[in-house]
Length: 247
Image 1 (cartoon, rainbow, N blue to C red):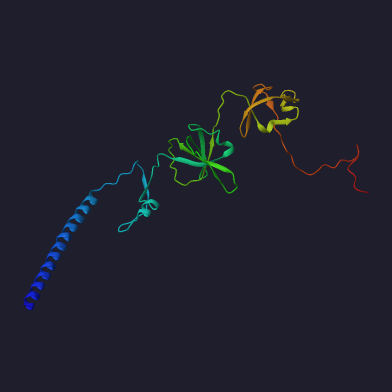
Image 2 (image 1 turned 120 degrees about the vertical axis):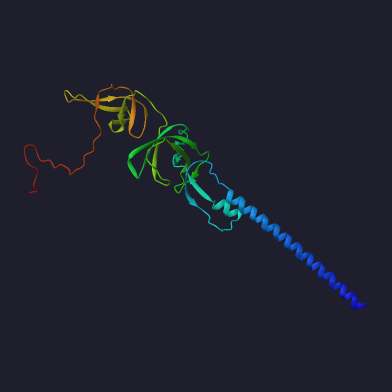
């Protein structure tokens, strides 16, 4: 009786083993079919960029295993739109309130010194960050107007933003202006006689080079620029005699 029971146990265990093996093979076949379908779908997959551009870097390669952190840090493919060039720079907090979106700007690129590009302010950061000198600066983005010059990402450039414009105004160089306790003056020269006249003027808006003259000067009048001449001191002697020789 014990021998018969033992034989039945073996048949039962063997039957369970065959059933598990059969289920394993079924699951394996399903997985292989599913894998094949995924591979077919992958081969048919077309990855589209949100805009037309040029691929400049690929952060992954075939058979790489990526985690969620890799997706956020490495990315996959970097595409650059070379037709929509933008300038990114910093503006000091003392000037940032004067900058508005839509203002015109001129941009010069260090690598192309004889070319001036134009554009408009498209973004102003709502918060600033302190730099190494503890001066708070705000990030500003300028989108450049279309140009036939091929610009590359990462080039060093400088932008001048026109925070205010004025037309048909009288301008004088800042070098021609003298400020005293009595007011602001320019020196006007008469080209016919060569005589000069110190004249008080009223100034309006100004930039780093010129100032607007509201009154005191007429269009066409010539002003004298401040000139600094350096050299050795002049040694003067007595009237009618050469400088003393020390004897």
